[in-house]
Amino acid sequence: MRNGEDPLWQHRHDIPDSRKRGAIQTYRIHVGETMDNGARILWVHSTGKERLERNAREQRLIKAEQALERLASGLNQRQLKTRTQIEAALKKATGAVGAFLAVTLEETRTSERVQIGRGRPGPHTRYKEVERVCYQLQWQRDEAEIARAQRTDGLFPLTDNTGLDPIPFNGLAKCVAKYQARLHEILI
Image (cartoon, rainbow, N blue to C red; front, side, top):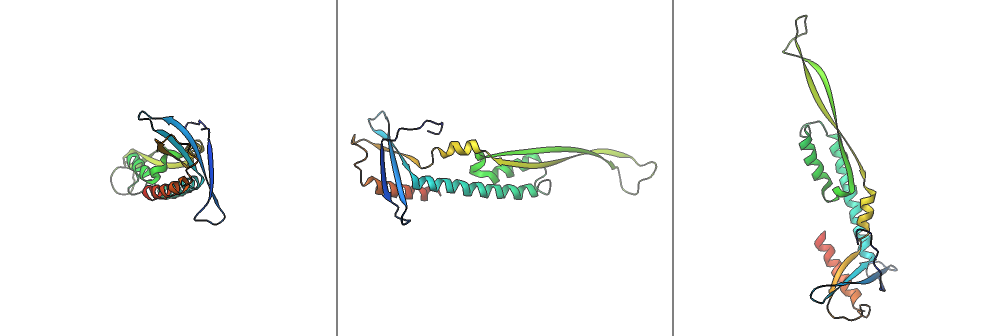
């Protein structure tokens, strides 16, 4: 589903949202393939779960971008002087949303003459060439990857071995809502 196939939604069930007055939760069901043991996979799409996942991703992206801003201001100082130190800090800063950010680390090399030894320069002063490396950090959101991930927002599988029509589960909405809330607690 993440690769762009649109499922054929066979059933739709609207229920009032238990948390927000006037809001409607929509559940759509797609009867998927049958597994080896005879059970079928019901793909359920929930608008409430979709909203939660998009908001959570956006919050994680904002947090990662703020961490990248702090990291960019501290480059080439103290613990962020080498490429390996910076890449480790980048990995920690982007965390789980690293796939949604295109981060580039640009390296600039400059060469300058530095006096060998102490004291004031004189006619017999010797110099050596010292190469300095400075890093700059740039990033932007990878909108294509974000759009690809948004295709599966609100989607989760349920297995069913009854063979019944999925929509008569009038209690399905309550069951799904409880499952969805519990899953959200586990993931966050």
